Amino acid sequence: MKNEYFVSPQWLNEHLHDENVVIVDASAPMPTQSIDYYQLWLEEHIPGAQFFDLDKVANLQTNLPHMLPEPEIFRQAVNKMGISENHLVVIYDQGNMFSAPRAWWTFKIFGAHHIRILEGGLQGWQQSGYPTESGKVARSPEVFNVQFTPEKVCSQAQILVALHNNVPVQFIDARAEDRFQAKVPEPRPGLRMGHLPGAKNVPWTALIDNGLYKSVEEITAIFRKQGVNLDQPIITSCGSGMTAAVLVLSLDMIGHKEVKLYDGSWAEWGADDSLPLGK
Image (cartoon, rainbow, N blue to C red; front, side):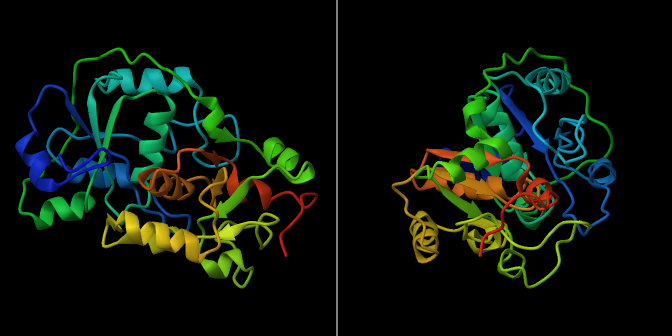
């Protein structure tokens, strides 16, 4: 095993049939895409991989996309997938590490003890010459004992409190620089352009190279270059809470554990004209 965050395709191939290993495809489309990743999973996936739909295992009582589900919704979904909190869950996506970290964060928030991400995703697996299969995957149901840590999730109300009370916390936005700087419209219709007051910009794509996270040294340098104080608490955000998790994982990798994720992110903040914008 590579480390506490990732496994290589070679390692996964060697442990594909271990009883304690469960593989999860957590692919999700970007807001500009209309890709049916469930259908793609049905057509081709790593042998035994379950499909974890971030848009369905979610809070469906809001019009915001893929918000964190209630603990019971998560528990029921993963029970059916045959996943307990003690399984080694190996997550991958079919893209460029866009959604796998969000699934990693979700499992972590609800108390999974052993979570890894497959380096290179499905493409890395295929490029290594390993087999895929098609069709649905059945596993015997398991019981996942949830240990929810809501203090790692940030709400709009908590952001406003932090702004009004000058709480020593930093907002880090994972969107592309042009969106952060309000130079291009948001991909989701009806949203204002701009960013949270005082936010710093670390585009998630700067931390990833060909489906792999950059080194701890490179990641640390990127955050510092963008003016991030790594000794202060951090709240990450993005367009809809998806790639904010890329930042959470990268900060965790460099030893910065005091991080919350603003789940509503710009999909929520940008939709409300009464909320302040950064300059």
